[in-house]
Length: 254
Image 1 (tube, one colour):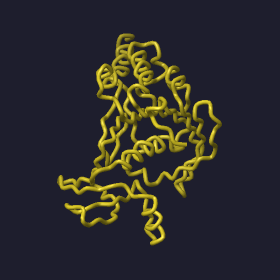
Image 2: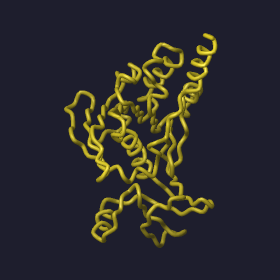
Image 3: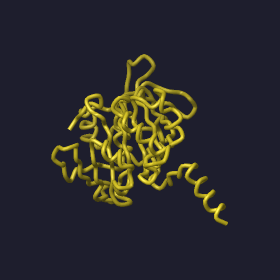
Image 4: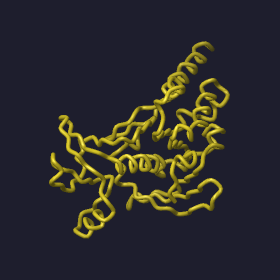
C-alpha cells in the first residue's frame, strides 16, 4: 500500500517484544525514503561525488551477476561531468546526502539527521524546524503515557496532533502500545506489530493495520541492510528533566 503523507496524517506505532526488530523497521522507513532521494556521497575527508539510488532493474541485473545488491547498501556514482557512472557499495566511512530530513532520539549513522529530545521538540514547537520530515521516537522518550498530564506531556501531545499539518512521518516505537501517550494512540494511522525476528536469515515478520482497513499479516522485512545505520544496543537516554525530578524526590525524602 502506498499513501502520500499529505493525503493523511502519517503517524505509525511500532510495538512488539524486545529484540523483535522494532527499531530496524522504523529505521528502514526513514532510510528508504532518504536514500531514494539521495544526491551524493561524501567521504570523511570532505570529497564527494554525485550519486543516486539503484533502480529495481539495476538490482535485478546485479543479483543475476552474483552481486547481493540492495538500495541500502549500494548506489550509482558519477564522475564530475556525469559522462561515466558505476555501482559501488557504500563505503563505511561515507555520509549520504539527501534533501530528506530526519529527527530521531537514537543515533543514526551514514545519514544526516537531527538528534531529537523532548526539550528540542517543545523549544521549537512554534517554529517550522520540525516539518516535512521523519520523526523517529524510540522507547517513548518524548511521549510516555506516564507524562500524560504534565506540562511537557500536553505539549508533546499537541505536537502529535499537528503531524498532518507539519507533513510529518511520525513513528513511535514501544514494547506495548499502552506505554505510548493515549492521544498518540488515538492519532496513529498505522499499527505495526513486530512478531518474530529470524536472526539466521535476518527476516522480521510483522503485521500491519492501516487505520480501519483489513490487517496485512506476516509481512516480511529484510533487516540486514539496515543494521549499518543504527546501533540496536544503544540505550536511549532518559529525558534529563525526569532524572532531575526523580533525584529531587530522592534527596528531598532524606
